[in-house]
Length: 402
Image (cartoon, rainbow, N blue to C red; front, side, top):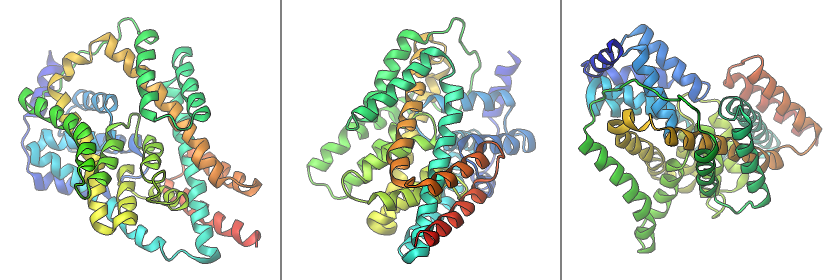
């Protein structure tokens, strides 16, 4: 009962949007290492140092955001801003945490045009190899936490086999199949949760947000068929953001299907930007700003950035008023275990194709990717250091191969 009262007291705490913006802007330029590391930074800053919310309330937020599709760390940040300063506080948190990384990705997109010659090719090759290492690390860590038993490991392995044998199958179908399989075989007795969040979102707002989420998901393709300009690109990024379970790295195969398959961006340009995104602070979803810039300049970056983050925010707002009841249902928990296991398989398949097959061509490539993987997983080296090493290695490999 004390925990519940504390959660509600946290939710009613008052602050200003400018205060939230300043706090998250500082994190937006210092938070390296991906969503799990970001959540650690958030706890240190807002639970331990500032005291904006309790450990229990923070744990409840993390549980909710990991359950939902979308970028978990950005959703946690938005929720903290929402608790501190209302809806403007949520917007301020998202802006401060996202914009610095997005600006850097736009600048990289314009600078990548000048990466010609052997040195430029070496830089791009090094970025592709570091992407192999970072996605391999994500697969390794996610498999240990999301597929630790026979049932979930089998679901993950089946997802890999399906995608490798039938590469044209949409990841969404694999996610749905994983949810059905989890609902059947991943029920755990006594797996319930009893905390409350108490965030200031009414059921009316929640229903409106969920309605808009599904309306855009179904309506954007219809608007595209009617010839509305810009809708196709917005729909592509919105759909990718709406279907990402399991963290930012899972957006890789979805975005590749979104922008490479229709020919908007070539494979090498896509993977170079993905590799560069690993060296930057902030959410990995700002990779969309790079893709949007390559497709249509700065307006394309703004459109892609809004489109990919919007569904995660809408479904978060839509779920908050109903979360405390929903997460106690064993069937919902079992389905999510299956979905998360399938996500591990989707990411593992993406590790092989397109990453491995396009980046690892010879023994030196494998050696450099292996060194980067060991530095990340064993030595816990900062991603920016590993990226710099891989870029230097890519240049050296290019010079030796002349």
